[in-house]
Structure formats: C-alpha cells, structure tokens
Length: 169
Image 1 (cartoon, rainbow, N blue to C red):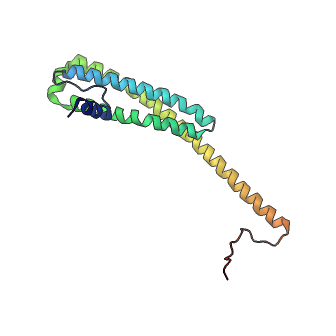
Image 2: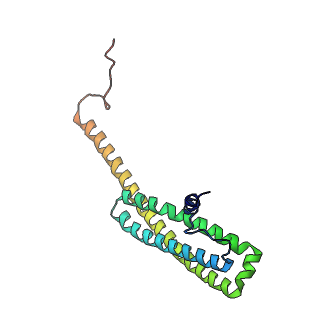
C-alpha cells in the first residue's frame, strides 16, 4: 500500500495520524483522548450555533450544520472504539497504571458532560422545529378551511378541483 493510500485509510477512520507500532499504549490513549476532546468541543460549538437557526426558522441552516457534524460524529465514534479497545485489553490497561486511568477517566467524564450539553441543545432544537412544523400544519389546515368556506359561500356551481378532459373522443 502506498503512503498516500495509508494516509487516506487513516483519514477515513477518523485518526489524524497512524500510530506507529512503537507508540506505547499510554501515548496512544493520550493522543486519542486529545483528538476526542477536540472533536467534542467542535461539535459543542456547532450545536450551540444550531439553536438560533431553529428560532430564526431557517431549517436549511440546520440541515447544513447537521451535514457538517456527521463526519465529526463518525470520527468521534471511531476514536471511541479505538480507545475502548485499548482500555479493554488487559496488557494495555496494566501499562497505563492507576494514575493514568484516573486522568483518562476524568477526561472522558469531561467529554460526557460536553456530549450531554450537545444532546440537550439537540432536544431543544428538535422541539423548536416540531413547534414550527405544527404551526405550519395549523396554517395549512386553516387555509383549506377558508378555501372551502369561500367556495361554499360563493354560490358558484363549479367543481372543487379542476378536471382534465381527454381531447380525443
């Protein structure tokens, strides 16, 4: 495999750089935790920016932000899987030691708080979009009722919907 092929493989997997075989489990865990933190904070920024778009009633902006978030979420999941594999491996876990485990746990707890904020904002955005959808449905229902009433009071005897007639006999 060429160097470019390897670089593309790691880019698709969400890792910034391949871990050389000589990198210790401790160094790899630290690197993964740092990358996860970076992506979580970026997701947090993006999530904070979505709320105003829902209030401004611009769903196109929300869809755009969601499209930008998707690769970050995928990368974060890949990093989490890799970190879990290291932490679940008994030899790697013993290499970390108690102090390192505590530091990694503290970092992961911080990331969980960030993800909790993101989930809460997403719930708020979803609720705002649902309120907007319900409002539009009510407006459409009102328009239909008003059109029916206007037809009923117009006195004209004409079909409700236009009809298409076949020109051939």
